[in-house]
Amino acid sequence: MDVAVEGMPAGKAVVPKGKYRIPKGTEFELQVTASAEVKAGLANLGSMLFGRTAKVRVDGYVKVGKGIIFITVPVQFESEQKI
Image (tube, rainbow, N blue to C red; front, side):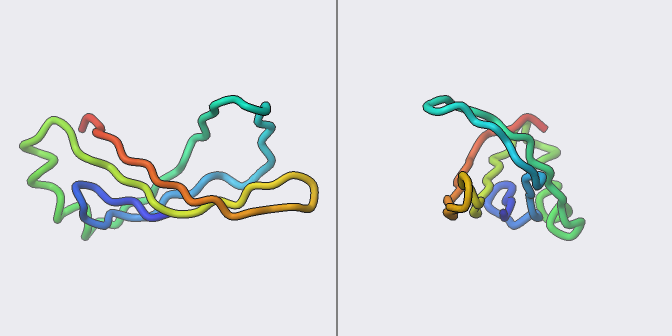
């Protein structure tokens, strides 16, 4: 999944591979690991130093399924994060 900070590409995010049991009809959270590119971080440095929050956006796809049936689901997440 692609990560953008203040609209500028910043790196990639991955959900750890494995099997997760998600109860039917519930909301859930998974921890995501993100790696940032230094060049992208320097471009956003000014806005991060002078602002107290930054808009973080994650776009991509995850594969979900049960048994032998799997589908690809789009992920679109956007949030204001404290720096």
